[in-house]
Length: 208
Image (cartoon, rainbow, N blue to C red):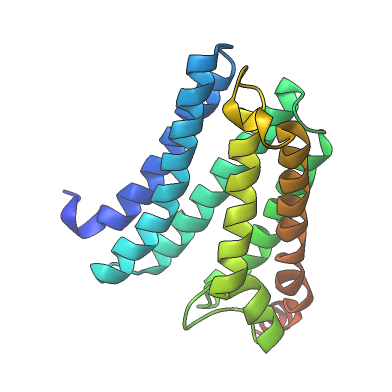
């Protein structure tokens, strides 16, 4: 029997996927109330993303499974939002296409790394250069990407809430598109070290 206490971090990782699903579902039931609830659930979903890592460290529940679940959760959540926004016509289809392509490429390479005992982040990171570790695993880059991504998602939702008070302060639709562009640039840039540094993984696999 699975112990909830011993797997709390992993449960949080999985739970945020369903919170995101609920938020996206509400986006397709057009009303300001539903959009505001979708906004709130989006905030919760991304808050849980930070909470799972904190719990893993605090409760000593870090593991390779936890690392995989964390990355899997990230992929499912971000792809779900990008695809939903594109279907709604709020962004170009190019955004989810880039996100999905990047996910397949990087996660395919990371699966090879995992089979050789490496992880995406942490002490056994697959990144061997300082610049690769900075772009992929540094707290600054991870937080910057998260801020750009969640900012884009929240602003895209608020931009479609009629009478949102923020309209009097900023051009929400334009600001949302700017954040979306920044987020997708981060998405691509953070994939580059994974791709360019992956040669040794395949050389090792061939030699074995």
